[in-house]
Length: 283
Image 1 (cartoon, rainbow, N blue to C red):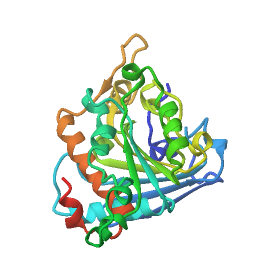
Image 2: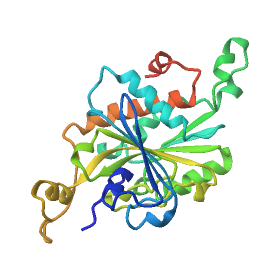
Image 3: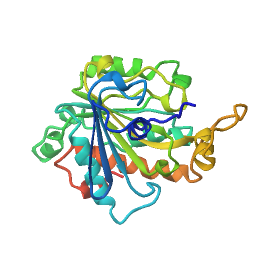
Image 4: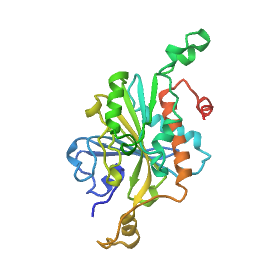
């Protein structure tokens, strides 16, 4: 039975170890960080992921505030900087803000510092610091069922107009290990296919489609019920057992706080001139 997951870490764990073309590096202080580098697309059928870098940050529940919050935000920002190209960036919040487990993207987008317009609006010497910030634009346009338009089509049209150097796409993910539900952040430079973890895949957002790097950022907020049954019983669920996606009881708090941490990381990564306290003032 196919296990649904968006996490490369879980996909690699399900195949024989030390396969040629897959490298793992472990590091981190505030998080346990595992970087998986897949060197070609030959593992799509087994791992479920194509060529790219996949960085997984694991810690305690993201729904709770931590004494190491600033360290977590700075470490997330540092990992993001290694993936983000120089130049103007478009941040896209994927998902449906009306469905809490799927609201991570829109809630993160609402906390990103948009600066693309500042150089045109501000020109005094007193405002020079603001106009020196990296140009960043933000978009969160809902899902296909709300707009009738694929998100990838909207983003492609925006890219034709803005011509960003790169895209950061934030989305809620699915995992297969209950312990990673709401405790894990995945970064990737291979783009994203919204809804793939819940068998509702839409058109992908990737370099192949837009011609610029697409950095995907996500947190698992749902897990497949058949996977839960398998992990608890050690056997496969009955074939006639209905399936569903399960989410944590405190998913509203998880989505709110995880989106804030991700926004901290993105803002710090994009605007190195800003301190943690500067970014805190945005919220």
